[in-house]
Length: 207
Image (cartoon, rainbow, N blue to C red):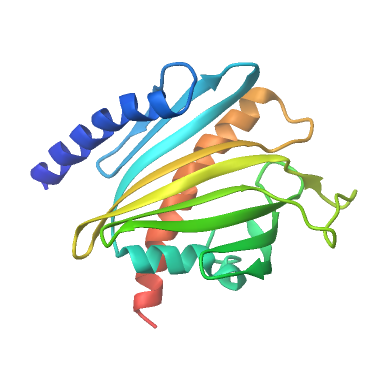
Protein backbone atom coordinates (compact mmCIF):
# COMPACT_ATOMS: atom_id res chain seq x y z
CA UNK A 1 0.00 0.00 0.00
CA UNK A 2 2.82 2.42 0.84
CA UNK A 3 4.42 1.64 -2.53
CA UNK A 4 1.17 2.55 -4.33
CA UNK A 5 0.94 5.79 -2.35
CA UNK A 6 4.52 6.75 -3.28
CA UNK A 7 3.92 5.87 -6.94
CA UNK A 8 0.65 7.83 -6.96
CA UNK A 9 2.32 10.95 -5.53
CA UNK A 10 5.18 10.75 -8.03
CA UNK A 11 2.75 10.43 -10.96
CA UNK A 12 0.64 13.39 -9.78
CA UNK A 13 3.73 15.56 -9.44
CA UNK A 14 5.12 14.51 -12.80
CA UNK A 15 1.90 15.26 -14.67
CA UNK A 16 1.68 18.92 -13.61
CA UNK A 17 4.42 20.39 -15.84
CA UNK A 18 3.25 18.33 -18.83
CA UNK A 19 -0.35 19.50 -18.51
CA UNK A 20 0.72 23.10 -17.99
CA UNK A 21 2.67 22.94 -21.24
CA UNK A 22 -0.27 21.46 -23.14
CA UNK A 23 -3.01 23.74 -21.75
CA UNK A 24 -2.08 27.43 -21.33
CA UNK A 25 -3.19 28.83 -18.00
CA UNK A 26 -2.06 29.70 -14.50
CA UNK A 27 -0.40 27.43 -11.94
CA UNK A 28 -2.32 24.41 -10.70
CA UNK A 29 -3.61 24.55 -7.13
CA UNK A 30 -4.12 21.36 -5.16
CA UNK A 31 -7.71 21.16 -3.94
CA UNK A 32 -7.75 17.64 -2.50
CA UNK A 33 -5.25 14.87 -1.94
CA UNK A 34 -6.31 11.45 -0.67
CA UNK A 35 -4.68 8.05 -0.87
CA UNK A 36 -6.13 7.30 -4.32
CA UNK A 37 -7.37 10.68 -5.57
CA UNK A 38 -5.78 14.09 -6.11
CA UNK A 39 -7.69 17.09 -7.52
CA UNK A 40 -6.24 20.33 -8.88
CA UNK A 41 -7.72 23.52 -10.32
CA UNK A 42 -6.35 26.65 -11.95
CA UNK A 43 -7.37 29.96 -13.43
CA UNK A 44 -8.09 30.40 -17.13
CA UNK A 45 -7.19 33.75 -18.73
CA UNK A 46 -10.26 35.82 -19.53
CA UNK A 47 -12.72 33.96 -17.30
CA UNK A 48 -13.39 33.22 -13.64
CA UNK A 49 -14.29 29.58 -14.35
CA UNK A 50 -11.40 27.31 -13.36
CA UNK A 51 -10.05 24.26 -15.12
CA UNK A 52 -10.16 21.13 -12.98
CA UNK A 53 -8.13 17.95 -13.28
CA UNK A 54 -7.65 14.86 -11.16
CA UNK A 55 -5.55 11.74 -10.95
CA UNK A 56 -7.04 8.59 -9.44
CA UNK A 57 -6.13 4.98 -8.83
CA UNK A 58 -8.89 2.38 -9.00
CA UNK A 59 -9.45 -1.32 -9.65
CA UNK A 60 -10.52 -2.07 -13.19
CA UNK A 61 -9.53 -2.37 -16.83
CA UNK A 62 -9.50 0.11 -19.69
CA UNK A 63 -12.26 -1.82 -21.48
CA UNK A 64 -14.52 -1.74 -18.43
CA UNK A 65 -14.06 2.01 -17.99
CA UNK A 66 -14.57 2.90 -21.66
CA UNK A 67 -17.62 0.63 -21.94
CA UNK A 68 -19.23 2.41 -18.97
CA UNK A 69 -18.62 5.87 -20.41
CA UNK A 70 -20.23 4.90 -23.73
CA UNK A 71 -23.12 3.02 -22.08
CA UNK A 72 -25.35 6.09 -22.25
CA UNK A 73 -28.67 4.39 -21.54
CA UNK A 74 -27.41 3.31 -18.12
CA UNK A 75 -25.86 6.63 -17.13
CA UNK A 76 -28.92 7.54 -15.07
CA UNK A 77 -28.31 5.67 -11.84
CA UNK A 78 -24.62 5.03 -12.60
CA UNK A 79 -23.16 8.47 -13.28
CA UNK A 80 -23.85 11.41 -10.92
CA UNK A 81 -26.60 13.94 -11.68
CA UNK A 82 -27.55 12.49 -15.09
CA UNK A 83 -31.31 12.18 -15.57
CA UNK A 84 -31.32 11.33 -19.26
CA UNK A 85 -28.75 10.39 -21.89
CA UNK A 86 -29.59 9.73 -25.54
CA UNK A 87 -27.19 8.65 -28.28
CA UNK A 88 -27.82 10.78 -31.37
CA UNK A 89 -25.17 9.22 -33.61
CA UNK A 90 -22.41 6.67 -33.22
CA UNK A 91 -19.51 5.05 -35.08
CA UNK A 92 -16.65 2.75 -34.09
CA UNK A 93 -14.74 5.51 -32.32
CA UNK A 94 -17.16 8.30 -31.32
CA UNK A 95 -20.69 9.08 -30.33
CA UNK A 96 -22.78 12.23 -30.05
CA UNK A 97 -25.13 12.32 -27.08
CA UNK A 98 -27.79 14.58 -25.60
CA UNK A 99 -27.82 14.69 -21.80
CA UNK A 100 -29.93 16.22 -19.05
CA UNK A 101 -28.41 16.66 -15.60
CA UNK A 102 -30.03 17.59 -12.30
CA UNK A 103 -27.39 19.30 -10.12
CA UNK A 104 -28.06 19.33 -6.37
CA UNK A 105 -28.07 23.14 -6.00
CA UNK A 106 -29.34 24.34 -9.38
CA UNK A 107 -32.04 23.85 -11.98
CA UNK A 108 -31.71 21.20 -14.68
CA UNK A 109 -29.03 21.61 -17.31
CA UNK A 110 -28.69 19.99 -20.72
CA UNK A 111 -25.83 19.60 -23.15
CA UNK A 112 -24.77 17.84 -26.34
CA UNK A 113 -21.27 16.40 -26.62
CA UNK A 114 -19.20 14.47 -29.11
CA UNK A 115 -17.08 11.87 -27.31
CA UNK A 116 -14.27 9.83 -28.88
CA UNK A 117 -11.88 7.12 -27.71
CA UNK A 118 -8.30 7.16 -29.03
CA UNK A 119 -6.32 4.03 -28.24
CA UNK A 120 -2.64 4.89 -27.88
CA UNK A 121 -1.61 1.33 -27.01
CA UNK A 122 -2.94 -1.77 -25.30
CA UNK A 123 -2.09 -0.04 -22.01
CA UNK A 124 -3.45 3.46 -22.65
CA UNK A 125 -6.63 5.02 -24.06
CA UNK A 126 -7.67 8.67 -24.14
CA UNK A 127 -11.41 9.36 -24.14
CA UNK A 128 -12.15 13.00 -24.89
CA UNK A 129 -15.24 15.09 -25.45
CA UNK A 130 -16.24 18.50 -26.79
CA UNK A 131 -19.44 20.50 -27.14
CA UNK A 132 -21.60 19.61 -30.14
CA UNK A 133 -24.93 20.63 -31.66
CA UNK A 134 -27.82 18.76 -33.23
CA UNK A 135 -30.80 20.14 -35.17
CA UNK A 136 -33.27 17.94 -33.29
CA UNK A 137 -32.14 19.24 -29.88
CA UNK A 138 -32.11 23.05 -29.98
CA UNK A 139 -31.76 25.18 -26.86
CA UNK A 140 -35.12 25.62 -25.05
CA UNK A 141 -36.46 27.21 -21.87
CA UNK A 142 -36.94 23.79 -20.27
CA UNK A 143 -33.27 23.50 -19.25
CA UNK A 144 -30.20 25.71 -19.02
CA UNK A 145 -27.97 24.82 -21.96
CA UNK A 146 -24.32 24.12 -21.07
CA UNK A 147 -22.35 25.68 -23.92
CA UNK A 148 -18.80 25.23 -22.62
CA UNK A 149 -17.92 21.62 -21.91
CA UNK A 150 -14.67 19.92 -22.89
CA UNK A 151 -12.43 17.41 -21.25
CA UNK A 152 -10.87 13.98 -21.30
CA UNK A 153 -10.02 10.81 -19.45
CA UNK A 154 -6.69 9.06 -19.92
CA UNK A 155 -6.91 5.46 -18.78
CA UNK A 156 -3.60 3.67 -18.13
CA UNK A 157 -3.43 -0.02 -17.25
CA UNK A 158 -0.63 -0.12 -14.70
CA UNK A 159 -1.49 -3.65 -13.49
CA UNK A 160 -3.89 -6.31 -14.82
CA UNK A 161 -6.63 -4.99 -12.51
CA UNK A 162 -5.37 -1.50 -11.64
CA UNK A 163 -6.14 1.73 -13.52
CA UNK A 164 -4.39 5.07 -13.30
CA UNK A 165 -6.95 7.64 -14.47
CA UNK A 166 -6.25 11.25 -15.45
CA UNK A 167 -9.41 13.33 -15.71
CA UNK A 168 -9.59 16.91 -17.01
CA UNK A 169 -12.62 19.15 -17.49
CA UNK A 170 -13.34 22.74 -18.35
CA UNK A 171 -17.03 23.60 -18.20
CA UNK A 172 -19.34 26.46 -17.35
CA UNK A 173 -22.65 25.17 -15.93
CA UNK A 174 -24.32 28.33 -17.23
CA UNK A 175 -27.19 30.19 -15.64
CA UNK A 176 -26.95 32.83 -12.93
CA UNK A 177 -25.12 30.84 -10.27
CA UNK A 178 -22.32 32.76 -8.50
CA UNK A 179 -18.87 31.98 -9.88
CA UNK A 180 -17.63 30.48 -6.63
CA UNK A 181 -20.58 28.07 -6.58
CA UNK A 182 -19.83 27.00 -10.17
CA UNK A 183 -16.19 26.32 -9.31
CA UNK A 184 -17.11 24.35 -6.18
CA UNK A 185 -19.64 22.34 -8.17
CA UNK A 186 -17.06 21.55 -10.86
CA UNK A 187 -14.52 20.31 -8.31
CA UNK A 188 -17.14 18.25 -6.50
CA UNK A 189 -18.38 16.82 -9.78
CA UNK A 190 -14.92 15.53 -10.67
CA UNK A 191 -14.64 13.46 -7.50
CA UNK A 192 -18.25 12.28 -7.84
CA UNK A 193 -17.66 11.11 -11.42
CA UNK A 194 -14.50 9.17 -10.58
CA UNK A 195 -16.01 7.57 -7.50
CA UNK A 196 -19.11 6.59 -9.49
CA UNK A 197 -16.96 5.09 -12.24
CA UNK A 198 -15.15 2.88 -9.73
CA UNK A 199 -18.43 1.81 -8.09
CA UNK A 200 -20.02 1.02 -11.46
CA UNK A 201 -17.08 -1.19 -12.48
CA UNK A 202 -17.57 -3.21 -9.31
CA UNK A 203 -21.36 -3.29 -9.68
CA UNK A 204 -21.19 -4.59 -13.26
CA UNK A 205 -18.83 -7.36 -12.19
CA UNK A 206 -21.43 -8.70 -9.76
CA UNK A 207 -24.11 -9.13 -12.43
